[in-house]
Image 1 (cartoon, rainbow, N blue to C red):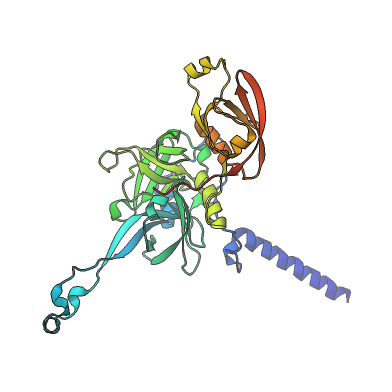
Image 2: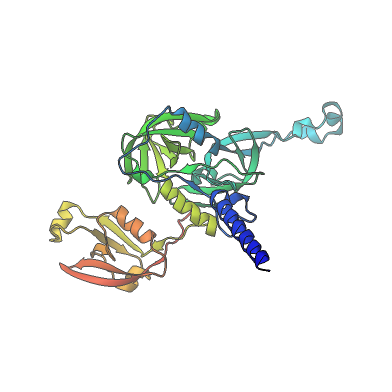
Length: 384
């Protein structure tokens, strides 16, 4: 009996060890792995600050990332002109029914990045917002229909999904917070619908905002050639890891002038996870408009070296009004987070969960005050 018990416990131990190894290294092999909101993502190990891996030929980085970048397109039905003779039986006898056929017209919308072996794809909101029927062409030549899981106009991100047998080639997420100006990058996408294309450049700037492109802006600027059709494609580092989703270019004529913008993959990942789990993105809101303090404003309010933002409007019945915030107050901090710009205030409030009570530290008439504000849910943006 003792021998059988030992054999049983050893078998169970080995089985659990094998299950742990499969769950850790190959979770997609387990049944129902993609259900219950759990999505498998690949992420590389963070490196020490200020270092970039040696470049042993950028072809290795390109070959690593290219299989995960797809072309997003739509098939539209083109109606033939209505011909009054089509209803004439004699006309149809000679010419048949070909004149009222409906030829297909394939139109490239942009690019996308496979982020999970289960078939989730990150792209731009503006790439898919007007498409009735979406299809995806993989780098290996396969094409399939896709459906929209959800999108977020305020970051210009969307998640679509395809269903194909087997594990799909997913991108590995990098760490854009470690990126530095001058780092080599590759932009991968499908410009002008010509086919998958890789361009090279450097990071020209980080944390670009106030561009008027999105509500939430924290762009990586690059001089890698980005053209129409690259939207939704990948910006990868010298190791082939995703650090951004190509989103926009500065150009008066539609062509690349060496000023392109990508949404950091950290922002994209956070947005994507909410879309996959809930179908949309939920953000905090207090209902107050602010203006950044100029030196002249700071002097007029006798603030000295105090940093903050000026409350210019308080929306009626908003969390800010209920808490007692007034127009003309200077918002200095939320809890222990200092607020020194409009962008910091927007990001700080948006990242707070609705229902959370925070301390708003303000200056009013030269005196410091503190108010409790219960965070509300940010309203959905109005359709343009």
